[in-house]
Amino acid sequence: MTIVRLGQGVDATGAFAPEALARVFSACEDFAAVIRSTGVSRLRFVATSAARDVSNRDAFFAGTEARLGVRPEIITGEEEAELSFRGATTSLDLPAPYLVADIGGGSTELVLGDATGVIAAESLDIGSVRLTERHVTTDPTSATELHAIAKDIDALLDATTVPLEDARAFIGVAGTCTTVAAVALNLAEYDRTAVHHARLDTDQLRSASTWLTTTTRAERSAVRSIHPGRVDVIGAGALILQRLFDRLPVTELTVSEHDILDGVALSLA
Picture (cartoon, rainbow, N blue to C red):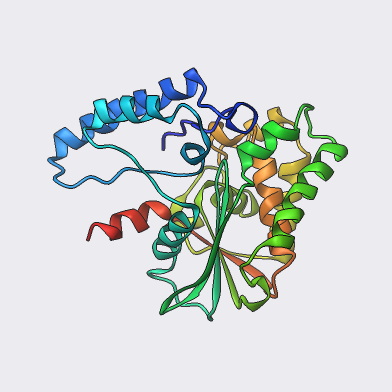
């Protein structure tokens, strides 16, 4: 997995950082080589939260299109949520309606739905990178900083139009949720087979979230199941997950390795 952290600094500056664009363009060159070698005939490139917010997205468009030959689609938060929902729920058998949460770097997508499709969806401007950059200056994160992060999370959850109280099951997708699961399961190394469809009860989730929000960067770096690109931001992501879980009338979290990427792939089928 390549983590490029395109949203670096976007919350503060409203623009992509030059080093973030350089990482994206390097990854695009790698992807282009794979595309050429495998004979891919159809390609869809979607851009999400960070690209919706920035003033210099034309530079992003030009650089990615030059390398991949396709212009990125900047999808809305609602489209992002629906793609995540489709990717996550295709092979799951859970009581409906179920809530899917995709906690990203810049935003969190919430989707309530069932086998017939989406009932309600919203994209919230809270993500692991955004909240870390906004509030965290100490290592480990101080109680004051954690309180400020929680306050931002709660403000948007209080105002969400998604009826969280209707959820009968909770599905978490993408890197924050899968990393929390890996820590909760005490995996020596990241194992997507063990993580996919893992079910975490209240105590497991709270224990993992507490550890991730109170440890030092060095302590998290020593855990091989945590991707190095997530070490400094996973605490904020775990807190989003925990604050959301605490509002739901459910007793467990089901984690899925299938997410927006699978939803995008299914959209090409």
